[in-house]
Length: 66
Image (cartoon, rainbow, N blue to C red):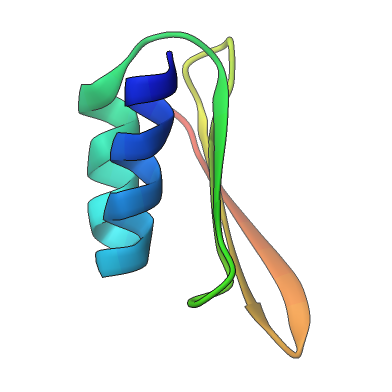
């Protein structure tokens, strides 16, 4: 689980899309990754949905269903 979180954090630091890809590939359990540098937040929920938020003055959330 810790390795999966690190994988997502590194991906989110590199690029938001990389964070999403890491979330899908890295693990199947719920986890949260944050990156203060890019203000990126990636979360994989129990239902298999990915919630992605980018902070640009205000927090915006996008939820992608599978």
